[in-house]
Image (cartoon, rainbow, N blue to C red; front, side, top):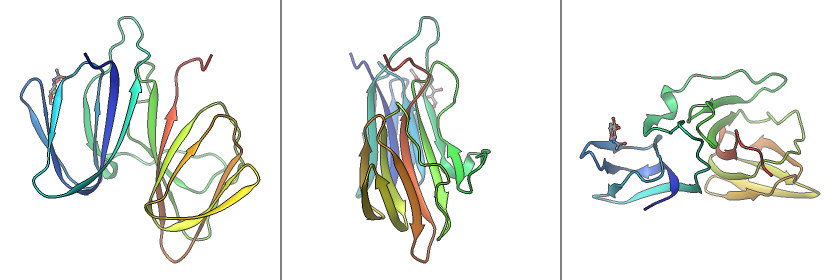
Length: 180
Ligand SMILES: *[C@@H]1O[C@H](CO)[C@@H](O)[C@H](O)[C@H]1NC(C)=O
């Protein structure tokens, strides 16, 4: 039994996801899938592919199951980001059954986070496009596409996009559960 929910995002190449019902989806670049815990599935790749995979021990709520989701970033609506300039999309429903979300955040060169954030949530981040500078606590890290960051709870964090092209990053965030 797999008690972990799994999230898969295709960075390069393509894979075929088949679940226990025998239903297949071809996932290409920018596509993703969320698989609830205990949903058996297989992933098949004919060439090469690069995937981001997050697994999380699912904190389930009684009678509030999560469902398999297959989608792509470009199908997701842009969301409001009060006080901020970056463009935000969320890949997983924000409803209570889901205990994490994946945000896709886009910054044009020169744009930066207005708020230096401090919060309980952990983040896993993969820079998909562009380059910039990430501040974690009192350290400043030049980052570029392909770089990954893990942000512990309560680490002050801030990003500024540099270079000549858009920055896009993928961000894991735990949500909807009491962190204690
Ligand atoms: C298998 O995938 C299909 C299509 O995405 C979905 O409707 C179905 O619920 C999935 N089966 C399970 C057991 O999650």
